[in-house]
Length: 95
Image (cartoon, rainbow, N blue to C red; front, side):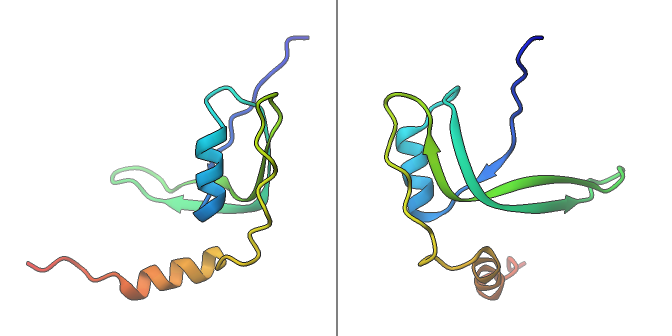
C-alpha cells in the first residue's frame, strides 16, 4: 500500500501563527490541535461551496529541528470574539 498524505487547511493566529511560520516549512510533519470550522461561500454563477478548516490552538513539529510546542492559546480571544470585533470595526468603502 502506498502512503497517502492529506493536506488540510489550517488557520493560526497571534503567537501560534508566528511560531508556526518560524519553525514549519513546506513538507514538514506537524501535529495541529484546534477546532474545526466550516467555511461556506457562494461564488457568482455557481452553487454554494464549503470546506472544513482547523483553527489551530497548538502546533507541534514532528521533524528533528522542531520547535517546542506552542503554549496554549487560552489567553487569546476566541475566533468568535475576533470575528465580532472585526465586524464592528469594519466600515464599507465610501463612494
